[in-house]
Image (tube, rainbow, N blue to C red; front, side, top):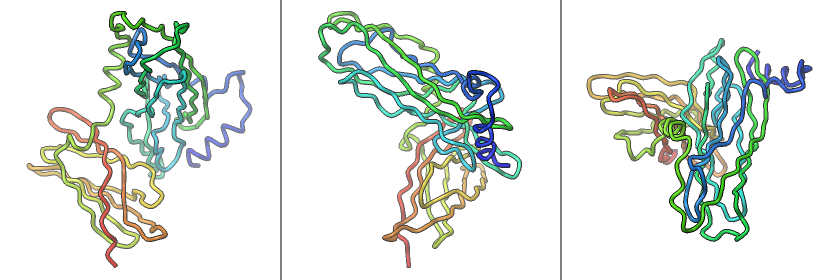
Length: 278
């Protein structure tokens, strides 16, 4: 039975506690990298999922099974909240070659926030809220959802810069975020035609590569192979392509995880499509 089917069974099964099991296996918290908020400054909120040991939740693209983790952040009027940024996931392979992209342990999604320069004169605290939903799995799956609230004091316009908070937690979380593709020395090449396309990555001095594709309506990952020599590591992604109306060209977004002698990092890619030669 697939993980998604198990999730549906779990959702319909009677709970043995007043708190759904999916909520007991994952704890939700909202934190900030500042002890206070100053007018006009940019700071970062962290949506923290503490996942029970051995269990996992899912990345933006869950893979062959599962459901993506959803996050909705809200703040006072005038505050600009960016989209939550996900840490690099892990690749899991279950029985039957079911490939999923997951998060384990303490997972922190980061969202940058810009405060307005002008604040109401009677405002002394800034309140933020998050609503989240997830599917938590191991051999069985349970849906979960939760809310978290955070209040930060408002620093005066003439006050000193607010002190940082949760420094080690945010430092570790930022290290797990993907880097821009422009920071990586690499080559990308499309080949193939019709329903069968191939995307080839080559990264000099890399020892291994892994791909995490985002969900696409037209292009899906069928399999991948890697090879390396003294000069570079290469990953060839085999893709299934479903044409659009009007006809388009294949395009894939996602992450490439690169391991070198200096360590492991991930990079966001958005391939430049090639014309469909007919």
